[in-house]
Picture 1 (cartoon, rainbow, N blue to C red):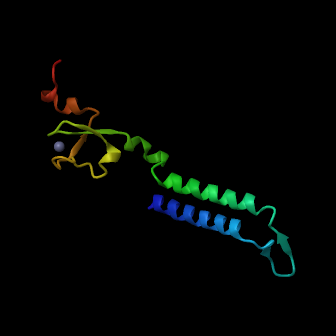
Picture 2 (tube, rainbow, N blue to C red):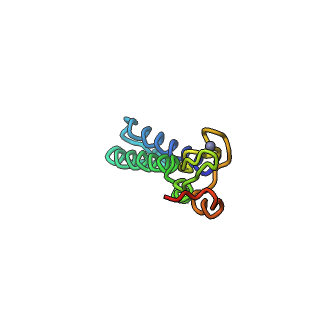
Picture 3 (tube, helix red, strand yellow):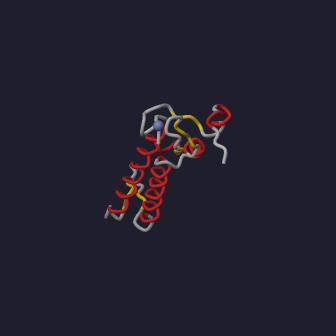
Length: 119
Ligand SMILES: [Zn+2]
């Protein structure tokens, strides 16, 4: 859920940034009480900043979450096929070939010493 929230926030920021960039009005913010701020010379700065920030959020939501990095790169192996595979390639932890549950490579031969091959 958190990843998709980042994605939505990023999309909104990019949209807001682009809307600022394409806006042709010389006065962007018109406050009530007769106080206007000329945003024209700053709109590129604000617009590009928002777009960059939004892309950053989207980038973060697409597989660059540091909290998941460790698990993503953890290697798993199928007891049947004995093919090691990266966790990020098998989100359900089922073997792509035979459908069995995958086990972490770490400690695999400690749990299955009978499978240890002597070279
Ligand atoms: Zn398998």
